[in-house]
Length: 231
Image (tube, rainbow, N blue to C red):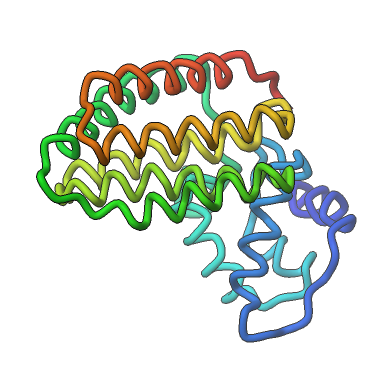
């Protein structure tokens, strides 16, 4: 009870919402940004009822939002009645990045070996990254960044590879967005351009160069996650 009261007080800073056809998506976006800003901290317990009351929405709507945020890696269910904002230890970060880097490299190897590649969705995600970077929209940037990588996994046509990377990487992206220091607009633009270069290399089947660029990019993300201060 004390936990819910404290949570209610903390969430009183957030606006209440009126019902609308897009309410579920609005709530998801709002909570994701609250996590990114540190208003909901890594490891903090959250409840459907507590947040529903704080934001003035039905618990059923909040339940749907929780399910989606869990799939995106922002929330973690630790028991039948215990859900927390995702938090990762340094050991967990290293373990996830190690496996992710190997599997992402495998995805690039598969793609560069395919005579025909469907990279349209990845190209659209690159454009979204650059647009968000230019607007200094960090949340939008990471949303399109994850979409870019997800599009590559799906383009391999290997559902097992794609589902495994989804499980690993969504949590890393959510954690990184909530924990990393605010990147400069210039840094985001450079990263977006780097992703465009990677896509061009994959499209032209330049495997070795693409793998080298991917390794460099992922090592930098790994280092940034490990150096991020706790909220």
